[in-house]
Length: 83
Image 1: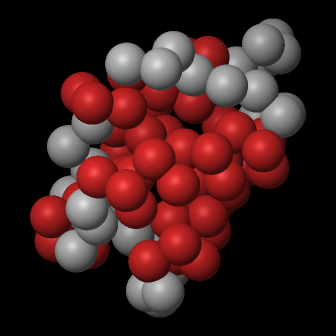
Image 2 (image 1 turned 90 degrees about the vertical axis):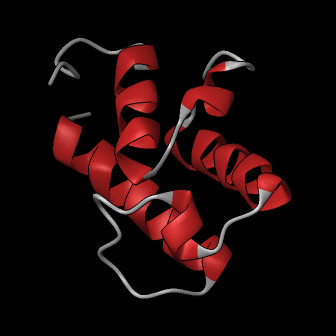
């Protein structure tokens, strides 16, 4: 598992959930029109796709896609996931 795979997975799942075109890296959730329910659903989709979770309250700190990427990289249970 490498950082690029995590970034691509997060991007893909967010685009799928919100029906927007990739890439969305660097965008805020406000710019993407994501509400709280969208964000919860995105987390669940990304966790399912990657095979690991993040702390339940960490999602509240994200302002955008880059925050989601950092959270999943930080929670990665495999060596080599550092930025």
